[in-house]
Picture 1 (tube, rainbow, N blue to C red):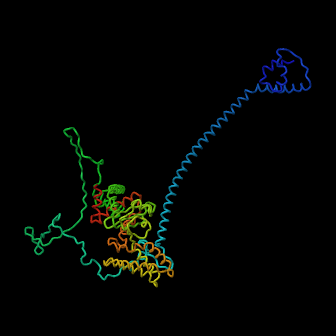
Picture 2: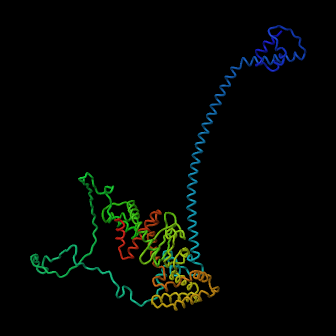
Length: 550
């Protein structure tokens, strides 16, 4: 007996599938008692239903406790997940910081790579120039050593043996004149002045014979001596600024500097002169000023003074450059100079009245174009055989014959049995003598060019390869060997330009490298103005003082 319909309708959702299947034929029955006869298969199904039903009842009884345990487990899992999320967030933050650090390292390495590439380009250019000019300092086994007398190697890079030999051997021929100043030479003897600043009288007080007092006895001047001396005087000038009120109510005042105390123009000019002209480093300038005047000045102040004066010199510096663009003769040269840890190049363009120096990272056409983009169309350019100069837009060229004579002298030392290099030297010296004697004609110039053409046309394959290399170099500039014979204002050497860049080497030897590009530019600018003033008969110090007073 079983209330099938009521039970099925009430718990149909929760009953097992076997029980629902069993009760499904009786869904329309309600509230009635029936007796059923079950077959063997139905009895077996009923047992299964009873087992499933018991399990279902057990689930209903114990489900709340199981669900509570499940909720507790979920909280633990959630807390674990939150902990893992926090760890992931911390790890993500650390990775972000690491990525930032790595990016900074990469940027730093990129800068270092760029600097190394720049140094590599400069080194390759230098190697190429040395190979073309054959001016390497290393001597080849079995060949004479190259030095300043037989190559373009500067004296500072010579070996000790070469220096000693240079002191005892000279390319100059004896003139037969005695050493020292020659007759007619204007000396530097001190000259007396008509009105001295101070007069000191020296009168005898006692008689050397009897010891009598001579104060009341009249004296007679027998001799005078003037003493020229220098006295360092520190002068403090106080500038006071006032204002006046006009009747109209307007307040009028003088423009005053925004500082309580400062160094004067003379001291600023002296500091600049000592560094630029005398090449004294900052520290020694500060010591010198302190020892002479008692004024303590820092190295930073010295640097600031130079930077300020360099800014005031911009207009004069640009004027020098513009005048060179229209000059008829210009000499040029370049030399290496260290700026920080890098090799830069100092360039000079000059003539008898002007000197223009600038520094650049490049030794090629890029550096020249940055200052002279249109070239020097009105100028005959006097240079060595550096290829960048021959790419410029100029009127004409003159190569330095002093360089060629030194290189030919090396060939004489290399092979004393040949006469080709000696004939070359004789031909060059003959052209120089014609210029010195003023005995130049168009016919003589033509004869010289013909002889040089024939000399360069001779085969030198039987001699050392240095001869052929030298000849190839001359053939590239053969049209610019005798330009100076047709133009009296063109020199036959580039010694003036070499002397101009020598100051850069002295500066580096005394003070070391330039610390920054700005410092190198400041020196080049002020040096150009001082040298230009000297060439025009003016004092270097006064020229710098004029710049300071602007």
